Image 1 (cartoon, rainbow, N blue to C red):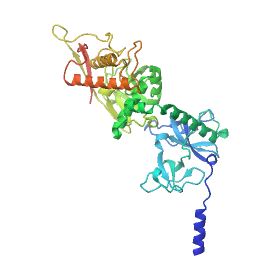
Image 2: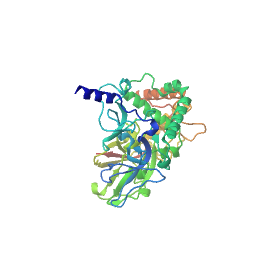
Image 3: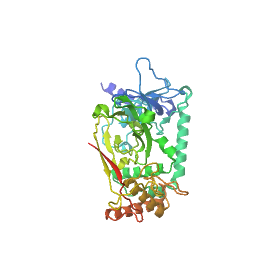
Image 4: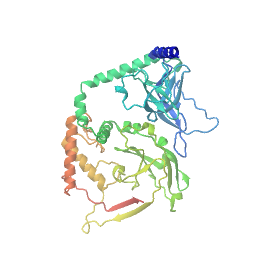
Length: 443
């Protein structure tokens, strides 16, 4: 008995050395993919289909599919030359695995039960960092160099050189790191992360920084980065008739929420009350494309006069995913008296300081236009939260320019004090009440 135990102990000490990096069978890989979405529940069905060899192979023989583009993390098998399974990147979870098969990159769902993080574990011979997926019920261990292989849609897996691809990605990462290191202290200070320790405060600051970064882009770039109508709306009907997606919806870009789509811009009407004769839509929240700064999953709905700016950040309602949300609408129309019997005024959208071109005047739009004018006069740049008027030499304040960020911060605080003290607000900027106004409330 003693001899057998000794032999087993010796075998365990003389474990087969791990294979070199390029001999691994399984690798983590990022690839463009199509995910099959249930048109009724908007839930993903099974593994997604990865793009390589210039195409995506999908079997449509037995059942129709509702496919939506996404970015997936896949298991790259260098023996069978396949990318499978593939799931949206954020649905994979990083774990500390304890029984990974040496040299293959494959790990069963058995995890380290200690409380120490991976960085401080001293004995790492039997533990590996890995990415796991509950639907796959297996894990893929991280590469020793930390690289996740990027697969181009036109890549040929049969001739793919993993070593060359990983080294190329490492060089690119090193180049980016080298070029940004010298300005890191100034950038960090401008971005406002110094002395921030609370997670909520850090996320809030990151959201603001993203808004600044997007603010420097062209309108075409902004719209192209946001979700598109055909990706967003899966089903739509109004007054028991199918929607015409091209005619019934119009695009409005909001600086907070990105692409927003206005229904009934053309003036369709329904003469019968009740949910059956109203607007019914099935929306798809592609969570795989959400950023880490996103605080919640869902949709923002605003019911408004189609001729005025919607402002979903101030007057919108949030609709969660996974539920059927129903809203009733109540409309009131106000007609005010003109001078000398009242103080309302007609128009206002023709004012050169009004920044919401193509929309009618509203008090909220006027206040925001006044704030933007004040900021531009004070800081020589615009707040990316608001549209930037087409003025020569005028642009949004830069995310990494400390002077512009400080000026914008001080200007915003000053404006807040003016409004909180119930003063007129921005000097030399008066926002009158419109003579005709439609108020719409949801219930």
